[in-house]
Image 1 (cartoon, one colour):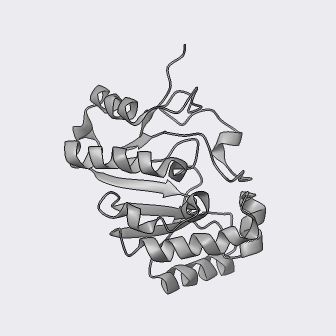
Image 2 (cartoon, helix red, strand yellow):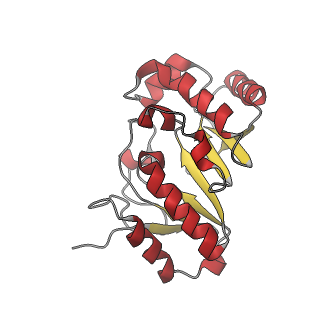
Image 3 (cartoon, one colour):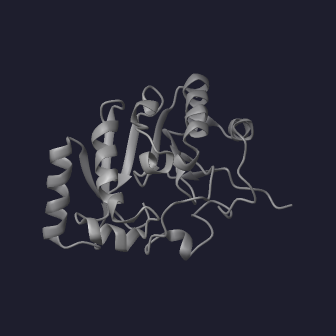
Length: 203
């Protein structure tokens, strides 16, 4: 049986790959064109690792080397939100590291409830893929199984979760939007009271 890549290094951070499930099929998703990231083996999981298995993986790494623990792999981490937060709690208590989750912002739709309060004390940063300022375009890009309502649900989640975590960032990808669209995204983030960041394609 080949080894599963649960943890992998990107720059000065360690990333946690806990699920391959996702409610979206984004047209730009890296997993459509590659199996791994630089420095990782395949991020396709044979099965979802247990919380205990994920926690045990950290013993294989020198955690002093890393600035941040990031929940992000070949899937939407909030598909396993409760398990992700258990691991985040372990990381904070064991290593005193900053935690971040990279998400599509559809946690409330996935779980059918307001999930923002669950992040309190466990995540330092929530980074949400805004992608576009337009609801219909968002649906066309993400092909979310929840339909066109996904855009507003994502915005609502961003506005709610900022009450519970220190930093909320919404991102778009450089070169994918016009300057006018980027300014509309900036205005959306300003209205929500969150940070707007334009990231490089593979960031």
